[in-house]
Every structure is written in structure tokens, then in C-alpha cells.
Image 1 (tube, rainbow, N blue to C red):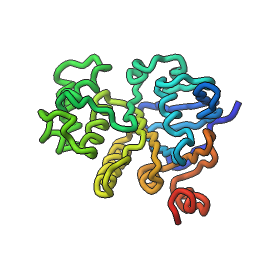
Image 2: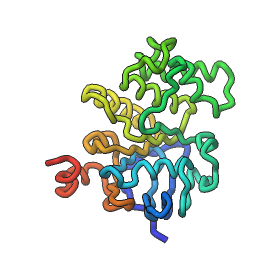
Image 3: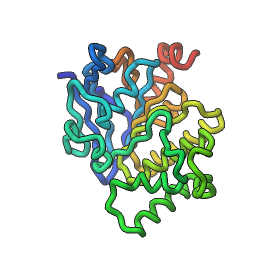
Length: 253
């Protein structure tokens, strides 16, 4: 069995003690292997990035963690709980939030109703839900201004903020984000970076999939490089940012 990839940068300490452990994870689509026996960990409060070219297996990895695609092998645990056989609809109940590629907001519902859907997994009283909304609106003031507007009328950047806010409504301890900068202007990419850095500073664990390597290196402490469904390199984000091969292939330098 392959050992989880060593991701050994500075790891903030969290009181929850929750660690994501992925061992020998594989994903096949028919006869095609998209992810091949990969392993890694995300420690409490740690921000880990996954970079790689299109088709490297990044999105398949996140979907497999969430149970959205069948796994052909491997084990996944979070905080000591085995999630390998947990159904996708129940993963969020174990403290893992998910922001999918392409945002996937509900365009015919208002901003606030989209956010409230994010709290469905929590048995909260009204006061707790209101507190959750207040926290999201504090993080994204533009959503507070547009709370009554249909989500389909928002810009791409605003929809991305809404997708992040919706995931935060479940009060996750680990957030999986798939290409949050896709299709955004440089200014909005900077805004998303600021949000990720704030969440990280607040102690939320992050697993970030991105083609934007510069964003990933700034938002995370450690990183995995995937190629052809396998983990090709691991290290601190600072080390990989300065690696000649990574700079040439992913940064164009």
C-alpha cells in the first residue's frame, strides 16, 4: 500500500483534531484510470493545494473524496471516521464542505435561499442559522446587498462568492474547493485569494484544486503536483514555487 504523500510544511494547530487521510485512492471511468493509488493528508488548520494540467486527476480526486464518483480503491478518513462508504449526501454532516467547479448555484432562487440550502445538513435553530448568514454576509458584503436577488442574475465572481458562502453555512471543518478562480478577472482572483487566506487564518482546513498555480502557492502552505492521475511531486508551496520544473511547466517562467 502506498503511504500518504508527505506534506510537511508548517501546520497550524486546531482544537478539533480533525485530519483528512487519503490512502491508495483510485478512480476509474470504465477502463480509463483517472486517479491511480494516491495518498496524502490534510492536517487540522492546514491548507493544501493540488495543481496539475487538465486531465491530471485533480477534480476526480475531490469528487471521489465527496463520494460523487465511484472509487475503485482506497480509504478515506476524517477525524478518525472512515468515510469510504459514506454516501455523498452525508459527507457534509461529517464536517467537510465542498465548492464544486463551475459554482452550480440555483439560478432561480434568491441569494439568501441559496445560502440557506447550505445549512440543510445541520439541525439548527433559527438563531444559529441567522448567525451563519451574518457570518457569510460579513465575509461577502456584496451578498448581503443582493440577498433578495436571484442567483442567476449575479456576475460570475458573485456566484463564486455565493458558492463559497453556501458551503460555509454548514460550518465545515475542512473545505474542498475546485477551481474557485476559473473564469474570473484578475481583480476577482485577488478577492478570492483574500477570502481563502482569511478562512485559513481562522483555522479552517483547506484542500484547494487549481490550475492557477500562483494563486495556489499564495493560498496554501503545502502542495501536491498531479500528473496522469498520480502524485508526481509534493512539498511546501514555497519550495514548489521555486522549483525549476514547476516554474517552467505551471508558471511559464
